[in-house]
Image (cartoon, rainbow, N blue to C red; front, side, top):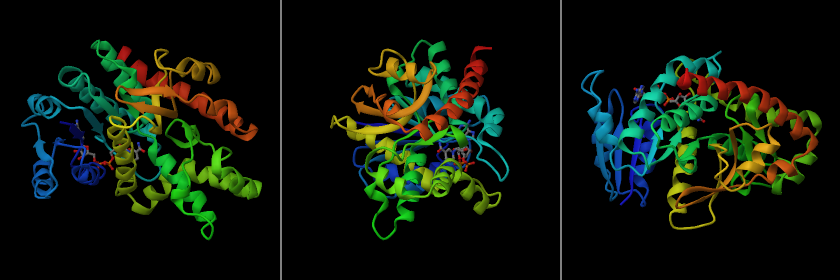
Length: 336
Ligand code: NAI
């Protein structure tokens, strides 16, 4: 029996993400938590004739902790898209003041009620919210670095789509699976087009077009924020991306060759994490391709860091400098 809980399930991402999870045959129980509107979302989804059971939980007051506890109990996977999204002109870091405490409180709930669950963090700024969750779980003595995932999958999804659009006659988005490393905001996002089957297409582009493509992946979220004009940020593409990572994790319970990029804690107990850290100035958190398995992240594919081009090395340095501050901010929020 697999139980998946979505925290923030009534939101722009939470609703379509929950719909996709409701359709997944590997999910037996879908638990929906939000501070508003979730009973309606739950009732709606519960009419779908897929085999999983749907339950929804909303606190009766600010002090009520039982709804969160009941939603989380017995969860194998918890996905967190709770919090506020960006408006035009905002960076992801601008969301820190509101989202940091939301994510901390949900992580505390996980520590108390589902300490063994896989935890996927969508709430921004991911570069800081993932360290917040790690520190909260550590404080409670239940942190397992193999099971904490910062969801950067939308950057991979965009990287695949955007290069394919440049070669629309010859390629489809599904031809690509670009490794995107670093973090999840602006210049911390480093797409590695120089590796794999994108290399030949990427190298055919002029230098200006290469720069424009990288910039589009790094700031693709802004296109959606501007187009929505105050009504939020990416929700549908994000639900797809979050679902893709969740689906891969669920698949990895049965198959042993699933690889995804994720923003993880490079704890040295994970194979390849020590080598990765040495190549990125000792950062504790970073997004890299990882091999998934029943126990979570089984191996970090640090080798990509040794294969990147000179231009990508420059992008990496910028990413490392910014990430250092983002990570410190998240860690300090819990420690101080
Ligand atoms: P939204 O405002 O539509 O939905 C957020 C939901 O969270 C709301 O239903 C709200 O009631 C709920 N919520 C607030 N406090 C909560 C709490 N304490 N417990 C449970 N639920 C709570 O926002 P949207 O568009 O769904 O975005 C959610 C987050 O995802 C934002 O932080 C956004 O920046 C982030 N995001 C992340 C991306 C990524 O690639 N990782 C991409 C796009 C957005």
